[in-house]
Amino acid sequence: MTEVTLHRVRPEEWEEHRVLRLEMLRDAPDAFWTTHEQALELDEATWRERIASTFHVHARLGDDPVGSVGMWDGSDPDPDGTNLIAMYVAPRARRRHVGERLVRAVLEEAQRRGHRQVLLQVTDTNAPARALYERAGFRLTGGQVPHPRRPGLVELEMVAVLDARQCPGRPHPHCETQDRADRAGVRGLPT
Ligand SMILES: CC(C)(COP(=O)(O)OP(=O)(O)OC[C@H]1O[C@@H](n2cnc3c(N)ncnc32)[C@H](O)[C@@H]1OP(=O)(O)O)[C@@H](O)C(=O)NCCC(=O)NCCS
Image (cartoon, rainbow, N blue to C red; front, side, top):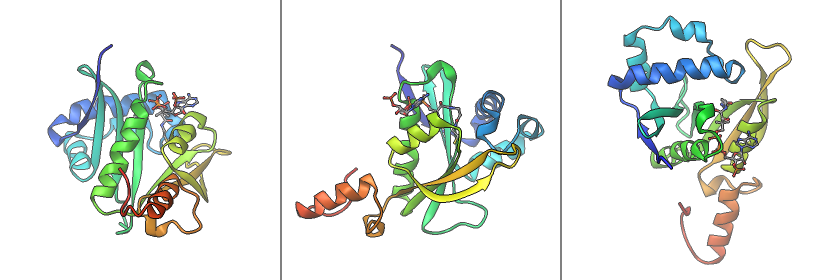
């Protein structure tokens, strides 16, 4: 079976990124706030700038880009947290744990940069994505906003806590693991 590899996207790879981005907006329009039409309008300089100002990872099946995820600190960055954005795995590569590996890449980078939590928004009807995020340790915060383009759909906020100091009262796998580690006298989060 061909191996899936992860790769941090560089600005000079903007064309590969553009192709994947347009594919995700065509394939799953309700999963993203940007539309395919809006993305078609962007010029090379904007694609390059967006890649340079965020952390984007692609999954490749051999040479074929089949998945993508981004990490973005937001327009009003919060030193404690960052956001997982633009999660996508092409239908030809689904249910092979590519999505899980992409989510993990963001959680690891967020932890490396010292963030305490990673937030994301997921449409209430998107059962596959919600299952993926829950399995990766995200939990609903209770926050929600209406979908910007689809009346009736709601965007639910989810969070993954990366710092055990935020754990009291929060049911989270990291915290449960840390509780066990504390009892065993082990410091720091296990990776
Ligand atoms: C959601 C998405 C990223 C999942 O990618 P994927 O690579 O197929 O997911 P994985 O193989 O890593 O799945 C990991 C786990 O998530 C859950 N999961 C993923 N897809 C699922 C599905 N269709 N139904 C139920 N559970 C699912 C399962 O628990 C799965 O583990 P398992 O296969 O051992 O049961 C992909 O379906 C996708 O790109 N959808 C369209 C775009 C989208 O919705 N993006 C999210 C925006 S918030």
